Each structure stands twice: as structure tokens, then as C-alpha cells.
Figure 1 (spheres, rainbow, N blue to C red):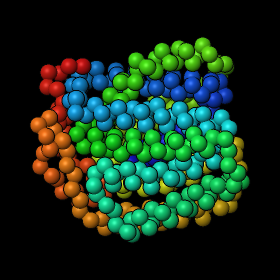
Figure 2 (figure 1 turned 30 degrees about the vertical axis):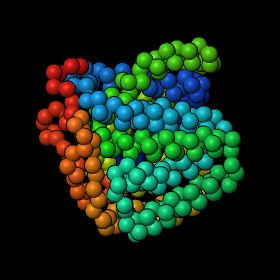
Figure 3 (figure 1 turned 180 degrees about the horizontal axis):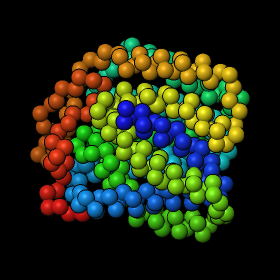
Length: 323
């Protein structure tokens, strides 16, 4: 359920970006959404006196920051200057496959052949539908979109792993706060160098990107990945392009073809298969300050072992209540 809520929030990202671009430049949209989300996250972390994560988690947080906080928003925003939301949905259609692949490499867990067959079929349906919606024409933003695909998959996978050691909202919260020293001056420079014509839609789009897509959506998404596994949670994203197209019709006035219901049913069938596919057990080893700890069996693809009591401080975190 949590992962599904995250997908619903993400499905509004491209339409909200299109709204934000009506009054702001791409660099302004990206930096301002990060700054606003970081202020919210930082306030929550400070109010709850959440201890700073242990240094062994910092490299993972850096991957999350580079991929999810900065890379994906910037590259997709640049792409949406020349691409439609339908064309950009191709990226979202490919994310489940790349996320599952990154997860397999990172955790050592190998999903079953049925899982991969259903994932490939679902991705093929989504790609075919999205390309048909955009007329089959490639745009100048394709390189941005494929770059966003890679960095986002890496960020999702690492964020899902970290969500097994600390609450999901803390994962994205610390990644956002860590970007603030760069995003704040970046926002000042971007606003000074790009045209700004703020209107109701531009403000609404930016606020949704900061609150819904950049923070709340990622909080529930990472928690969902920790609960059901990175690979399986990623398959729920197969429905995201179709949801995005629905929002594009309602919010942007784009035309939706009759192929949408057929594609929606096909995608839902593929999601059902991946959710029920039997996945062989795998082993995940996590390195601690003193070396490699005891291996933990993982019964589902990408599942992140819960290593700490949720009522205690996250495993590996400092215990001196530093803000």
C-alpha cells in the first residue's frame, strides 16, 4: 500500500513540472524544489531530534542525493522543455527493470524467470503505449530521459536498502538536507539567471514537486520498498505512466487515445504476476565498522532486512541525540 501511494504521488510529477515550467526555468524549478523540500525535512529531523546517521551510511545517502534528489529532477525537467509528458513516461516505464537490475547487483538476490518475464512484458506494454501516445517520434530530450533513468534506479535501490536501517522519511530527509549547501546558492543563481513569471499554476506545480514528489512521495515509497522488497515494489511503477497520462488529460488538456484502458489492464496483469512470482532466497551482507557481519537470508526479491527495533534509534546511528 505504501509503495502504491508513492507511485500515485510520483504520477503527478511530470504534470506538476510542466506547470512549474510555465513560470520558472528548469534550473530554478530543480533547485527551488530541493530547497523547499530540504527545509521541510530539516525541520522534521530537528523537531524530532533524529540522530545523525552513522558514517557507514553516508555513501548510500550520497547516491540517493545524486540520483533521486538532484539527478532525476534536473534531467527530467530539462527533458520536459522539449518533450511531452507522454514521451517522458517512457522513462517511468523502464524504471522497474533498471531498479530491479540495480537491486539484484546490490543485494545479490536474483528474481525468478517468471518475475523477469512479467516485468519485461509489462515494460514492453508501457513503452509501446507511451511511444504511441507521442507519435513514435524521438525528441532532443531522450538523452536526458535515459540519463534520468539510470541515476534514479540507483537512487531508488540504495534508498530502499537504507530504509532497512532507518525510517524511510529519514533516508530522503538526510539526503535533502545534505544537498542544501549546494541547492540554496544554486537556487539564488538560477532565479537570477532565468526568467521568472510566477503564476498560480507555476506556484502550485513547484509546491507539489517539493512537498509531494520530493519528500512525502519518497517517504512512503522507501518505506514500501523496505516492506515488500525493492524488486517487487519497483514493479508497481509500471502503472505510473498510465496514471501520468490521466493527469495529463485532466490537468494539461492532452488527448488520451482509446488504447489507454487496454494498456492499463495489461499492465495490471503483469503487476499481479510479479507480485505473486516465487523468488529464490538470497543472501545480503552488510559491512559494519568492524567488517562484514553475519549474512542474513532474504526470502523475497530485494527485501531489506529489518535490523533495528522501530522504537529505538536506527542501527548505526549516533546515540548522543545530535540534531
